[in-house]
Image (tube, rainbow, N blue to C red; front, side, top):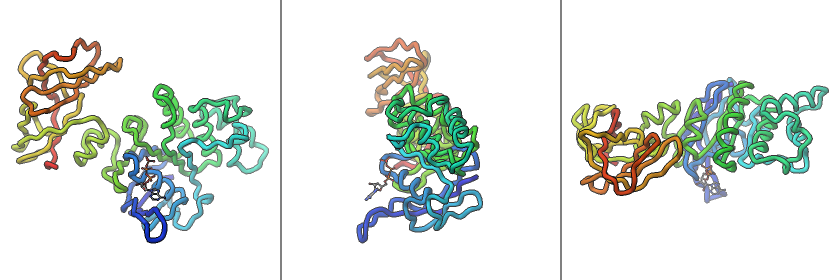
Length: 340
Ligand SMILES: Nc1ncnc2c1ncn2[C@@H]1O[C@H](COP(=O)(O)OP(=O)(O)OP(=O)(O)O)[C@@H](O)[C@H]1O
């Protein structure tokens, strides 16, 4: 079932103290796909999920699930499952009882619970109590519970934020697989850029309650609509440049433009575009080297670059040290935006 949000606005607060926190939010998530709403803290992500679930009133706009307009439909009749941030399992019920909570009584109940536990890769765990589960297991039980009544849409509120970094990647994969196997349309909200880019079929970037951009993770990362979005979805610096159509003159050299521009512009440069070269290039001094195993992030001060500090993502092994002098070149075309 597709999920369509059109011109949705919402307020929080009481009486005369009401504040508009969602402004004309519109996007569409295709049936059976996963959308990620990415925004900084306070951008309105949780409020948006609560509006979709029918738990928060909207001022205007529509929410449609397939051909159903959900205006006035109470939460329990929306066929939307919500997985809250902390999973919120019932502590005194077993895993099986938690999962069965959303099911109607029937002879197939225990079989269905086992199917759902298999789906989230927790076979045979039905008898455990929530306090006997790891954080990642509890999140998957919460997902199984939300999927139990076979909802049209599942909403996940920062589902991986309480998990440590190593576990997060694995649980993310398990959740993605479980959603794909059931063909459930899902929306996940997060403030974690890497998570959103890696898991989503479609990305919705939200800032101050308004949609900045909707697109595939690749579209948004490679062609952000503005500087704010470009810097928010991934590490980047901006340098001032003078554009003459397809080229731009910057302190990092004369660069080719992805989008034609004229006059003074701000140029977005990502760490993976910064290459070290032996031949001609811009001189820079190594400030720090952060080693990540698969690659390293090297901070560089550009010589004569009026205080420009740039990050380079370099394949390991990296033999650079603080204070070394290197030459850099910006590979690929760059994006130019109007000066802020
Ligand atoms: N009951 C309330 N009264 C006043 N302001 C509120 C209330 N609830 C939320 N807000 C404000 O509404 C805005 C949106 O909040 P919301 O929780 O939806 O953001 P969020 O993007 O989910 O944030 P986070 O990532 O920190 O959870 C914030 O500025 C928040 O301070």
